[in-house]
Length: 448
Image (cartoon, rainbow, N blue to C red):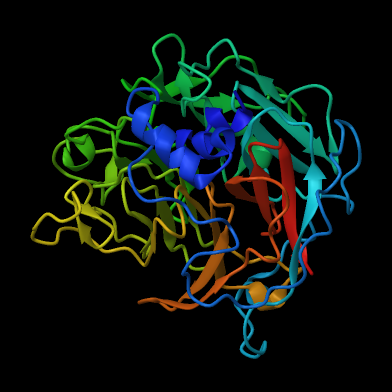
C-alpha cells in the first residue's frame, strides 16, 4: 500500500491500478467503506479542458533530489524578509499572464507530510506536520533531527487509506511572545476530530511542551472520510477551523446543531464564548455551513478574504471565496455540488452561495485549496490565488476582483515535479510552499 493511499482513496486507486481505466474498474468492484467518490475518469495532468493555460516558465529538470534530514535547503533559509504593507498589493503594471515559476526543494525524507507553516514573524523556522503525529522543525534551511512535537500516542486513523491523522496547525499571531499554537487531528482511540491548544516549551525554543493546554473541540467522527483539517487565524483575531461531514448520508452539513461539514470560528481566549457574527442558533461555533470536505482554506493576508477548497463528490470540485466578516453562509452541500443539483440529473431549487470557481471531474478529483501570493520574491504573482488538485497533480490559479474569478491560468507546466500536491503553506514572508504527500517532500514556489 503506498503512502498516497493514506491521504485519499481516489488517488490511491489511481496509483495502484496504474491507469485511469483500471482505476475506474477497481472503483466499481471494490474498495473500503464509502469508497472513492463516484464519477468519470480523471484526465492525466497534461490533459483536460481547463481554461487555456498561461505559460508559467520551464518545468523542473526531472525529479528533484531528496534532501536528507539535517541537510541544507536547496536555496538557503526558507524565508526572505517580510514584505511591507505597500509591497503586498499587486503592482499595477506587470505585463500579461503569469511570471515564470519553478519549485525549489526545501526538505525531503518526510513521512506522509500533510501541512507546512511558519511561526509569525520568524524567517528562520518552518514546521511540517507528518500524518502519523510528528511535527518536524526546519531551522535555517535544515530539517532538525529532534521533532518539535511527537504526539503519535494521541493520533489515530483507522487504516492506511483513511483520511485521519495529524492534519492542521495554527500559530497564535503573537506566538513569538506567548508560544501558543493549536492542532487539528483525529484522536485515539475512536477517531474523534480534536482541536487542542498547545504551547512552546521555552521562549525561543525548538520544541513544544509534550502535553496540551486544553481542548477546544472534540467531535465524534471516525476519521475515515471527510475529516477536514485546516486551522488558521483571520484578521479578526479568531481561530477558524474546517471539519468535513464524515461522509454520512444524509450529510450533516446543513444541520446547525452539528459541527460536521462546517467552518468554525473560535475565540481562543474564551472558547466557551462564541464571537459575535457566528450562528446565533444551534451550535454557536459555526461560521459557515453546507460544506462537504473543506480540506484546505486560507486567508489573503492583505485583504482578509477567505478562500475555501471544498472537495467534491461525483462531478465537481470547487473553490469558494468569502469577504471578511461575511460568514453564516450556506454553501449548498448536499443539495448542490458546485452550481449543480445533487445527485446529478435531479431537479432542485438552487441553494447556497455558488463557488468562485468549479472544476469538472475531467480536470480535478480532490481539490487542494492554496494561498493568495503576497511575498516579495515574485512581484508579478502578487494577488494571484494558487491552488492544485491531489489526484491529477495539476496546478491552477486566478485573481479575485472582489466579485468574480478573473485571469484564470493553469500552472502545471511549471509546478510539476514527481509528486501529488496535498497541501500548501506560507512562511513568515508570504512565500508559498507545496507539500507532496506521496513523495515526502516540501517545495517552495520561486521565480522561474
